[in-house]
Amino acid sequence: MPSFQTIAPIADELLEKVGFIWHHDGELEYLVKEQLIEIKKEEAEAYANATEELYAMYEKGAEYVIEHELFDVLDIPKKLIPLIKKSWLEDRDKHLYGRFDLSGGIDSKPIKLIEFNADTATLLFESCVIQAMLFEYNNLQKSEQFNKIYEALSTKFKKIAQSKKGAFSPFVFASVEGISEEEVTTKLLESMAKDAGLLVNYSTLEDIDLNAEYDFFFKLYPWEDMEEFEANAKTTMLNPAYTLLYQSKGMLAILYKLFPESPYLLETSFEPIEKKYVRKRMFGREGANIEIVENAEALLVTEGEYAHYKSIYQEYTPFVRDEAGLYYQAGVFYSDYACGLGFRRGREILDNMSQYIGHIIK
Image 1 (cartoon, rainbow, N blue to C red):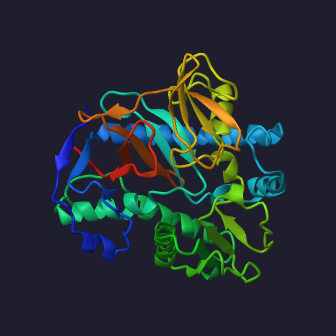
Image 2: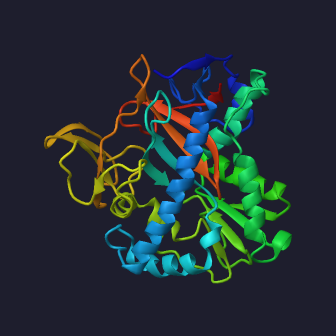
């Protein structure tokens, strides 16, 4: 069983003052305010090591997909293939950030890759800002936390800017109008770039001027939904188009083919496997359109809007559970290196109503 440290719950008005207005949904509390999950220092290091190794695998997996023209296998929209190839050649070092979802890592359970949210990763604000607030509110600053996200991304912005005009390279950050979580997350990234001494601007995606003179454009919007997007040749996209290869769950099957002996990978195929498995859609999100199947019988099914995508079949692995029967999944952020950790907890299939819980290293 995982262990926890009890903390004083932070006041709602303080959370909302910093923009965290989605911490509850009606009667459901999204943020776990009264607990932190305890992990050991060596467990934090193991998460970081696993993530570093997995990212290197993804780079090799992308090379394999591009070399063998396997875009259709990964359900990549045809119109985006030229952009993907171009960005792979020109913008390999401009993947701003992503989040690896992992099972295990605590309670003596082995770390296994569930998927990689490489393009439009959520939980950034919670993992970067809210965890730090919980520590400060409870006077835990002398304790440790695996949370260098702000520092990593600020450094990454500086590095990206150097590929053009350095501190004089203008950045624009955009998200969909009216979605508070995405707006706050995008503005957090904008503030990181601003704190790094860069020229920044924010816009809604509905109002963005793609012909404006921006060197870099970050959009919190899925690449797979951008088939009608017309790139401005002068503007570099963040995250680059090639991160759509990483985002596709088809890459899980590619990695298992290339690295079948990796301790971090679950058996995954484009066809049903003989073991108990989880059927996922290539670009499914937030636990939608998932089936847990054993002996040809669907044990658990979720509905959603992603059924039109192709499927992959991933070996089932149990998440860590607490005494109340809740499941725990680790999320490790990557920006040139593994830089932060947070957890979600909920039902066996973690969806958008799963709770976020911070951690403390003991």
